[in-house]
Length: 320
Image (cartoon, rainbow, N blue to C red; front, side, top):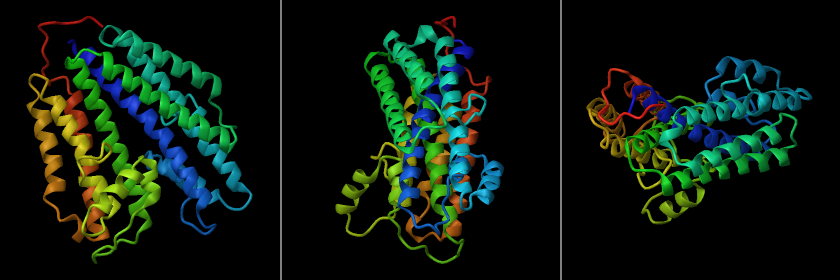
């Protein structure tokens, strides 16, 4: 494969996962805010904070008072759904997804490309910041469903090649990044930093955002003691959205690539961060630091994967 194709197939995986995760996050936060007490610390701008727009989120949080709440909600939804210029928006992500799919068209199945076309057309027709909450919920659910359809088509028809491995690396790296962001903002920043051992929480809101409520309940039911949702999302390797699972999948896919030693080394360092810690005994402050280190490691792993100096097999080049 050409290095140009490597980059586009990797980003194809990242953008597809980002589209699904953003839709899930919008619906989960909607549930959380609708059910929350009026004095809760949560507000609509927390969605922007999760996705890294801290300054914009802080400005909107300061104005989210009284009658301005509805206006702030509409502005946040514009950023996240319909604004084609916002790098956070679903419209922008879908455009970037389609661009990368066109660029590496010879590497992906025709059925997958048709599903992406259908997804883009649906968003062009339905995406709007002025949707009612019910319409928005239905749209986000449909986006997530269509993303899963794309993954299903690819899994059933795509050749198990370097392109397939790179696509899955992109997907699971994006998923790990989103999971840590959600934990960091929706959970950890709501707790006061202390040095004492933290209490256990089930955090239904974060599990909803990651589609893990039922699997977590099943897991807890078969444990001798209660398990914090944060520990579950970090270490339970059988749950597809846990950090441990994502890192295992990145490593498994990387092993199919030639000259991928740097990727595997970085993944091993990330896995060691989780395995070397007695997570239930960590204080809130120590947990904050651990999440920060994991996020830094994910960024470093992304840079290793995208570094042109990492050599891939070029014996059978496919022109992009």
